[in-house]
Amino acid sequence: MIPPPADSGRLHGKRILFTRPREYAGELVPRLEELGAEVLWIPAIRVTAAPLDARAETALTELQRYRWIAFASANGVRFFLDLLKQRGLNIRPHQKIAAVGPATASSLEAAGIAVDLVPEKSTGADLARRLLADAEPGTILLPCGQRARPELPGLLAEGGWDVERLICYETLPAELSPEDLRRLRLGVDAALFASPSQVEGIWDALDAGERDVLRKAALIPIGTTTAGALQAHGLHPAAVPPDPSAEAWVATLLRTFEAEAP
Image (cartoon, helix red, strand yellow):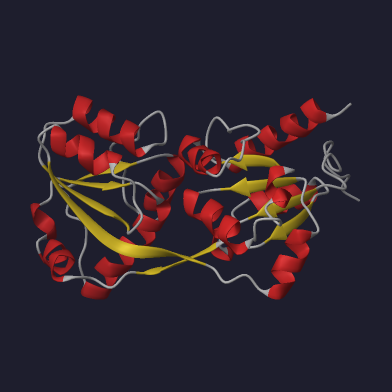
């Protein structure tokens, strides 16, 4: 018999809210369950392909004119590559590829696309600053969602880049079922949020009194932008992982509970 991992059971008795759509579990949910947690997997958002306007269709038709293509999320990679496949298009050899962080870069590399630039910090502003520092201004295409933050295109435009945003996906609130709400109202020990839209989805699904469920929990956002979304609602992040990996998220969660222990 294979013995259990040495740290199994460290989250025994803890109820952890996880708000990502089900297609984005990765390694995190199995790892939490391996540690003994009860995971309340309640997706707060759904991600769908966006209808393309004439400007977006033109950007695809003229894809070869962009020197750089920069991705600020793995969703941008997924839906942009779907658009290329539907139209029989490919990224050209002369085009440089930038990714906001390791997870987005991994999505590109899994599709056989080499990544030329990844900033040290996984934010749109840091991606813009790295491009401004390391590359000559030129044409750049930004596949993104309708709720993409403005820092990346704004900073690049200020730096003399010819920027085109291509909205290829939409992030919409998920409809929580009565059973989801019942389970959530029972309370959670911690909640993990991977985007501001997930914060909004759960917040809006609860009425004023029910939001105490979040106020009483250890809230772990994936990064500083999501932490800001929590703070905008008067919620206080317990800690922010140093990077967006599952390992960092779990380690941050464990440290948070250990710090709270009597």
